[in-house]
Length: 445
Image (cartoon, rainbow, N blue to C red):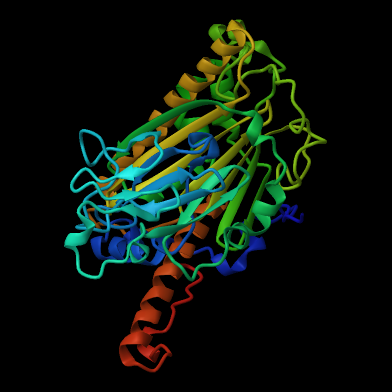
């Protein structure tokens, strides 16, 4: 699986000249009308990651997901019907009542059942979505239950991850994930079922948090207090440079050093980390499973096969980050926009189940250390949102290490531009976009 190395006397950006080098316009993160277009053009037309198959491990298990990113009030049911995992709109076909909920209809729920029963008039649906019972059916006029199943949502599974797509005409999940998806197959996700999760509302545009996680330019400054003094000063003086970047279609990745287990110099880490053999990079002691040693990793991970490799972060457009750590664990991020200046951030950490107390504590330390770093990243976002929202300045220069930010904003713009062109073509009835509505392919966004 090919990737582009950095030229000896050049830059990462030289490998993708279509991205340009001009300042990037951040109006896409402050304009309410642009956000509405993103909702229709992006979140209703791309594959969205919902969680792992372990959420619904056997027949009858279900979860609900609230998805305002897709549209106001959009809620879905994800269920294991015994043969496959399915998704449906969480809506009764009788009078539109929300079908699955507990005390508060806006909260996500999970459970196990043999059938879904509407709280309002007791219409019943089996796990495949078929309507099986109508209360006082004889009172209806020529009602055929076969005509009123739950409305399905496209649902596919990749390597144990559940995805949905609200566009019936979209390409398959495998085609959408492309080369990165193919190159990650075989990683032992199924072995890492010890799960920690965090969820928080962030008062900032969804793309701003992705921006924060796709560059390490900020790390020596923002996270200085988390490192030992000598190590922090060294990072601040010399900066941080990733090992590799790669872009394939809508998706991208960054590969970096770090994650040594144990560190070569124990003075680099804090006393609690020395005791528990753990920290931000995860537990130092690798789990005894196949598929995580350097020569066993799938080809997309550590594409340069660097000996000092520690972590890879894959950005699957629009809003899913899949991040691997060398010691043998991984985490995911999801960014669910709720408005132009707000989103829900979800982080999920996955480890091989611990075999003893020490392993358990080392995983817990990794989880809480991650949270502290994430808080620091999130803390800058609301300050950023407040200031770009003034529109005093709308264009900002990006350095070579911020190449994936440039790619994210360009990709999001392209989706919106295509959507607007398609709407214009439909409105003029020609089937082709007018000159005024043609897709804007701007290298500099």
